[in-house]
Length: 114
Image (cartoon, rainbow, N blue to C red):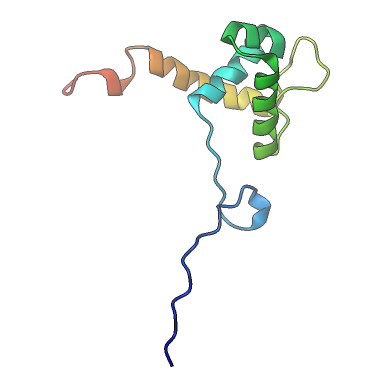
């Protein structure tokens, strides 16, 4: 009797740590820029204006990130927008990455041997 191999299709990676397996989450520099703009400008509308994007797109991006992280990034109903401690921690690290990307202190931008 001949057996056939099982089809090799991998399930998508889990998106929540509760799944009991490793999960995948990517936070891009663009995402950090979005958070930074809201924190600096105090509202989604002002940040979206500065970023030349519709406020609804920025709001959706923030809601998606919050859902994937399982965290609240800005206190609801606060005016101006107030980042939560989790958002502040993310911004502290993220702003260092944004700064390194745009300054000469980035080792990846320096010639070899320096």
